[in-house]
Structure formats: C-alpha cells, structure tokens
Image (cartoon, one colour):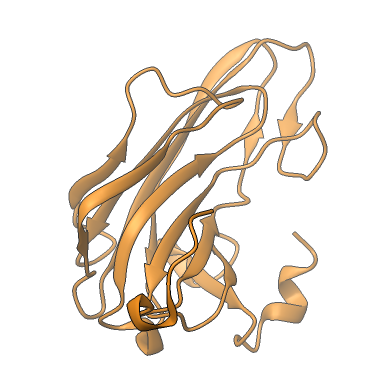
Length: 174
C-alpha cells in the first residue's frame, strides 16, 4: 500500500470476479472450457479496466481473457500470461486502461490437466476447480461476483452478476 494525499485521490476502484461453473474434468485428461462470453452489465458501460488476474485451483494450467463485442467475436486478447501458474497467478496491470465496447464483454478460456483418478467439477475446495478472473476497474460501481453458464439462456448460455441480478438466489446452487 502506498498512501496518497486527499488532493491526489481521483477514483475508487472496484472489481468483477467473472467465471464459468460448467466444469467437468474427466480423470487423467486435459480439458479446455470456453471460450465463454460474459457481457458487461450495462451500468458498467464506460468503466476503465486497469488490471486482471486469472484464478483456478491446483489442476489449472491457464486462464486467457479477451475483450469482445459479442459471444461470436473472438475479441482482442488482454490477459494471456506465458507460463501461467495457478499457485501464483500474475496480476497483469495495463499501461493504458481500456473500456469494453457497449454491449460487449469478455471472452475467456480456462485449461486444466486432471492428473487424478477422479472426475473433478466446480467448487470451492482444494479438490474441486474454478474458472474465474478478477477484472479491476474504475470508477467503482462496487464489487460483484459474475458468471456465465450454459445452464441458463439457451445455446449461447446466460450471465448472472451478484449483487443486482434477480437470479442471484439461483446462483447459490452452483
């Protein structure tokens, strides 16, 4: 932490913790989930993203994130860390903060190597997996946990962002 004077303060930062819970890793296999598209909530239109960090558990081998205009747009890569490590995921700080196009969002992909004899799915324990990333932005509209899942929204899936979405109570089931 580096203290600054009140006169130098400009914007409070917030973050989105964005992911996909649709993880099903077969024993002794590699797996890639995605690309998944998460549309940025309209109330965050115009915020500036200044940093990003990938998040998986011990079987994770990579998290990649691109900005995109729609779910069928491969987008522009913004987080792709060579030699990415689940135990020490790099926080990429962008020299120039960026905005996401209106009605756009993030395309993201997660990869794993399941070296165990068990099927592994989404969860919060060390024996389960996650596919998430933190997207740090300003000015803050608050912190949110958001995800894209094929369990909602038809062929392209659906998005939930909590707090604020009517489906947040449903999200607890994931």
